Image (cartoon, rainbow, N blue to C red; front, side):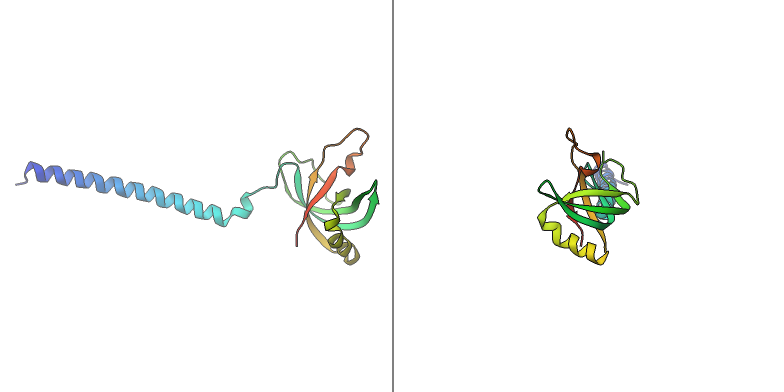
Length: 141
């Protein structure tokens, strides 16, 4: 009824068809996983080590030892980077900041506006207080 060549061809075609379908399904699943990860990318990425995203209110702005500082009251900590020291809600902190942040901080202080900022912990040197070793690196819009 079937010749051996036809039977071999049928078997080979069936094997190739099965392998092709299996590979395509796995690739499709991987592509779906990648697209889901891209959609949720903001939730996956955590802050850099030693940093935290903090919601706060600016209570004071001042200069000390030729550096700019502000006092804040922490409302909440939104995200922590790995190895970041804990920060308590409702605590007060002194943060060093760059001149480029002064205008936003002045505005937030005068309007009693809540800010979302990223801060980084600086290493504590000898004779330095623990509460003055934080610095603002970003103020979110």
